[in-house]
Length: 364
Ligand SMILES: *Cc1c(COP(=O)(O)O)cnc(C)c1O
Image (cartoon, rainbow, N blue to C red; front, side, top):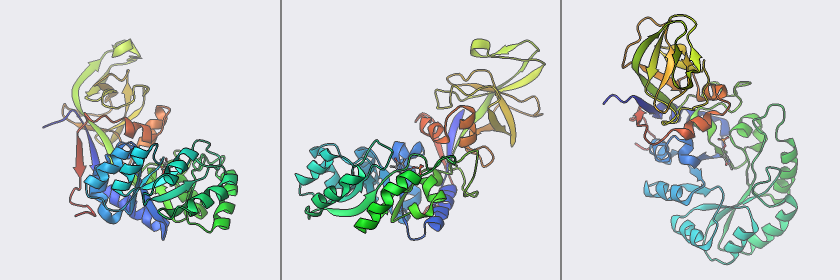
């Protein structure tokens, strides 16, 4: 079967990135952040590759935790936003999950239950979405301390600007560090950007997504770990080659007009597959190892690229739209005003995924 559009998931790249993360983190544990189906990579594909080499996964939806358990994962599963009601608390107990407690209603649920669960107490240090205010933490810790059925894992927080080179974590860290010092508890604070940029935030458990998937959250300003590799790539085949004369326009809305005779290759992928419709003329695509530029508007299942500089493009040739070593999702995303993670999450489940280096798996 020659798919017009497909993605590749590279086990070797994931294991490589994971080893780099382990080297970076040393004694710090690593939650593999697998929300949104592992940033579009496929949560179970991740788990099948990493096996029990991953000590923990962090997800948001109960259904994802359930899928991991059903796939045989026996390690730590953290629900990043905790549970919302008593029924979910029961599910969490049955599945043996670790919960974030970020709000009074969740504390009340735990106080009304005898479920033996592990919990991280989330502190709001400035993100202002989830978490107890720093001044409330001593009181909440006292309430948790009398709940002998719980195992308190430590304090958690999340940074708003760890990846912003003009700003950073200073204000949030000044609110968090004293609580850690006073309580003597382990902590989990670092996402990818903080783990790379601020070693003091690594704590007992870091929560890493982007780094493991090979994304550079500092693109284009900096690269802290130059050796990470993209795990997921979006590929499309040439489904038609055509020629334009000077003055001919191309595609919906005629947003591109040839200034001189040129050859274009039509690729069998579009916004219906998850390629961003807002990608402008000139967005890079890799074909025959060369960069060619997008021309015309992205359609539902077709895009076109200028292949005038390539001698021998034929129907059936494979182009990489993002996820190559020389064309990361971050770079393509920057052309579209977004981040690589959004492109990855946008991949629809109609796109077949081919696992590369499937024999390389920590689970095998
Ligand atoms: C998504 C998420 C992370 C992972 O962030 P990356 O930048 O992808 O490493 C960590 N912590 C929380 C609470 C998150 O929601």
